[in-house]
Length: 324
Image (tube, rainbow, N blue to C red; front, side):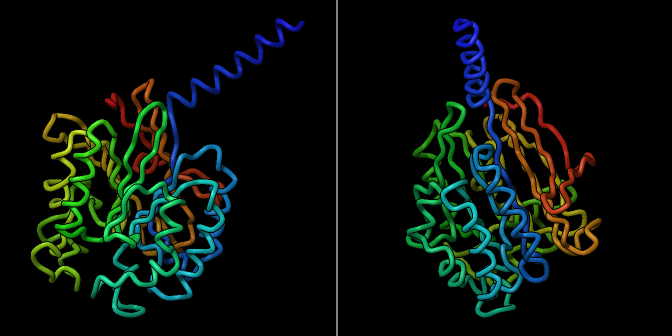
């Protein structure tokens, strides 16, 4: 009887252990801006659900446009939501064009992120986010977290809207100093909804905002620029996540970097005015599973608010033969 008991325990332990070593999951939160403005209960519900899954998810990424109007009221709501997962699930925030500006309702006319840094104080954020570096120092505008998951080391970057030349230089140096880490890049503006990178005369380019008028080291970069200057030149960048774009609000792209390795790039945005989102209160988020053993990246789209998966092909899909 005792032998059978120990066999059962050993089998359960091995199953859980193998699962932990072979795969992991994390959450990608698309633009929550209209939730902050009109449907805060939907956002709070998202965060409550994540809190109940604390043993499941390795971290949470927010793609930016946390707020709609960069107002005290909206940042208070944002902080209330993330407080629900403090100490439970690490999170890394990208700041969007709606999260910066000279005053409420001014979207990226200047790179003023005072309110973001007021409600997410750098010293506390570093501990919560597993950050090993922020840029500028003492601010959350750009941050790099380090994780040790499935027997692999990871760097997770969350970069500002329209990353500046000096921001890209900072990120490149960190990646160069960690050549054996897999890298995930999370930034607000990168892909367009036609499955291409933002460039040329596309709508919503960072260059078309006030911050886009800067030059030199402060000059901004769109998706195509970021690919050329950061993503494709680093062999260990595996995934890129972004939001910002309306229309269908979704897109995916697999591109070869300079080392002939695939980079998996995804756009997701489920806010108000996105096609198929009637009121902007859908509450959809992305669940990403990285399966090292089977060489898969699985993407699912789920709404805790509706308790529903969106299984349409553009919202639920798998990348095969992922080399890690």
